Image (cartoon, rainbow, N blue to C red):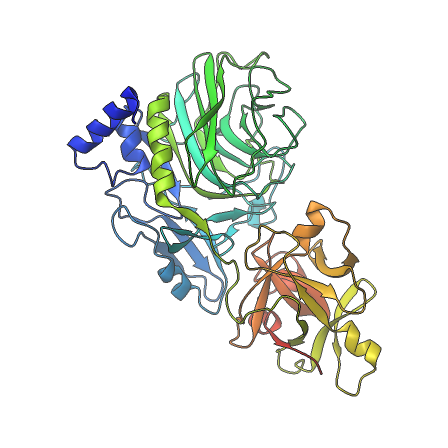
Length: 504
């Protein structure tokens, strides 16, 4: 049964004929805390919105296109993306603001903590295919942020400044995180510099323990308020802030003069829980706040860009939303039915099978991905080669060591059982499994149809802008255009396409 505040909100929406179809921002508006920014690559966040959700660019010719919902208020048209990106690679260049305030998120510039690897010190852009999911059975794509990726708008329109009230939510992948600073979405500095305590108010998700923590080992939802990640009034720990285990997670931060709150929920079922609601942290500079009104995604306020995470949708509001409004938004998110789908496509890899991986580049198509000790390279191998040479170029397909990577796989060396193909500093290596989270992620790969029309192209799960590539007969996970010599666009589609066989 609806509580009285929820019933009032529902009746208000019903009066406009929008109860069933109201989007999150329609719900916030009915609660008198309208969205001032609304970002999503998965769906429209207003019932009537039919404009662009995000822009992608493709490597083959540098052209861009906007991805729209299939209908007003609907899910993203992933088919348009798949057609546009066929036989090439694509990046997400803009996350459009659906609120009408033009708070679009674009490639983040350098900041006080870090410069990116791209021209002018800008951060990297996210792969357009790194985070496929389904909404109500329809495939869409999220924003997979690997370390070095970041988006920002310098000065938002209508975004809270000073101690003004605001709210925000984001739907995230609860299994994709690390302990670096800082996977954020929210309000930050306009200068890309750390300008002091209280100059940010953003959702943070991860296992960073430098400032604050919650209960258990993490990951946790916390608030990045600048020079601190906070889970409550105590600057170090809030035992009521739980470790999150949900695959899809609704994260909420909201603040007003000398009050702020953390709330969260499984984005696929159930209602919100309040992890903290009370006074500002017991440290100097946070009461009153000094928010500046920039918006960022995937980075800290000073462009600290070592974090990782996945973003599906999120908004920022004017005013401090009521719990009842947020509860209705959570019900809307659950009704969207976020579910996982395979991260792989193209010719299938069968777990337990023994395979060979042959290059398709003209003039090199008798060479196979092989190894000598930890070094991975390509070697000419035939049925006349020694047993040792053949076994060095054979791999056993295993379930992904990063178990959350649905449909992906890991490759165990046939001649060195317990050792796997992994990337380290983007160089392919064969190393023994040390059981760490980092090793599991670096040893997990996902497949798709070969970029040159032959066989498979194999991408790194943790860096989906990077793919198996042979370059000067050495093995890398390479980008289709980037700062390293092995990232060259010349012959990329050929060098990153391999035929999977069963022997010699």
